[in-house]
Image (cartoon, rainbow, N blue to C red; front, side, top):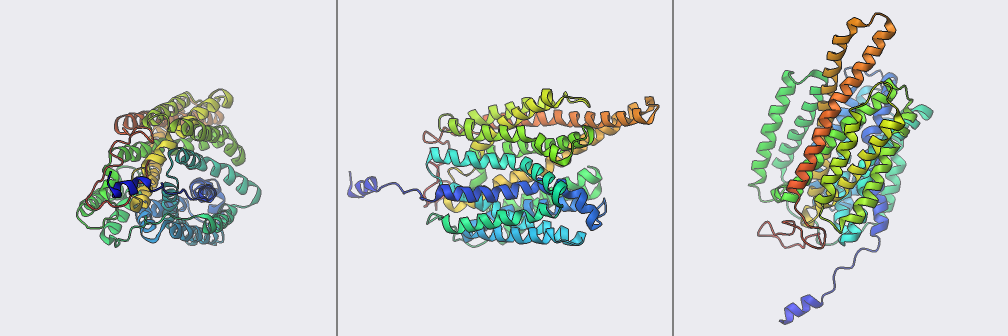
Length: 512
């Protein structure tokens, strides 16, 4: 053996950061804040609309402004985390998100509210990929990585439902403004903790210049896509502006891919998404989120309008799903992740979730919560928690440290775009089925009470129709995960994940 080889063999493995588990607490806290903010404001929206005098036509912008900024700027935010350093991007994102939340809570008119929500989206797009990529570069041991991503996956999956509970409490017992102000202590605690305990590994920063054409094309393309689906929900799929948005988005994103394949320092190196495993993760995860976001919407309306639950009771009704996600992610997923290949968790997880969704197709006006909604939610939670955890880990496994931010951004992008598509697509299917049902049955309803029953039956009929589509989407997610995700269990083999993809690969990969 040569002296060089002996020296290399004798060189000890990098010592893991001593503060990595403390750092996980603050990273998870920041992730919880971002995820729950996607739903916490929904519960408060009726009260905020009345207080600020926002019209019915404009109220969607409270949700849409956040989704457009967040979804459109995620790739840019991910690359900025790679360029600036993830800790710096994380702290700037937290401080900016807190300031935008304070502005939203203090809003006195609709315009200020819309602006605050857009700013939350901007800083969220910087914060979310920085948080995930910090985990990717700080946890390199396979078993520790499994535990860390188990916790992170549970928060990413269950945070939306936590937002419904917290939003219900704050709106019912305090004031809608507290759904914004509550972010400030979250952000302050996460920023203070991260400042002292997060230590970003050396050598992981990307020193290349910023790809400005890529930033412009990706941002406009993603904004066009998200806005197209948002308009489809409110104005219909045949609306000329909706169609125009989809066409423009397709052209811009195609141009983005062409530019990325030619520039020296691309915003999104195509090696990140052309890897079979990561591509399979992004696609299956995005599809699964389409199904889940639609379900949150339908169950919220079903419980409040059909069953007459209060906002707080509605939030608590989602607890079985949150519990299932936590158990699936931190117990099933974490324990098995180092023993079986990721697809052996992802594909069955999505199928278990599809089974839970299938139960909900039997939903009727007088369905029992304990007999139907409870077991369905437990299956959904267990399935999604089990699938999300290895997906989150594999999405950043094997990337060069300098690309960890943008790989993390792709996870968030698939979730955000999936959420926008799911809300618009499934809501449109439900609305069409409801309208058709009421038109067919309202003639036989003589009294006002009978007409109200027909309308409620129509709503439930619409929900179950859309849920059938969600079942199919989850089954497709399982098929994609099983077909495309070919990585072996961590520490054994990662098909294609650790291969050098360009001539300048000089930085060690993260995966083990």
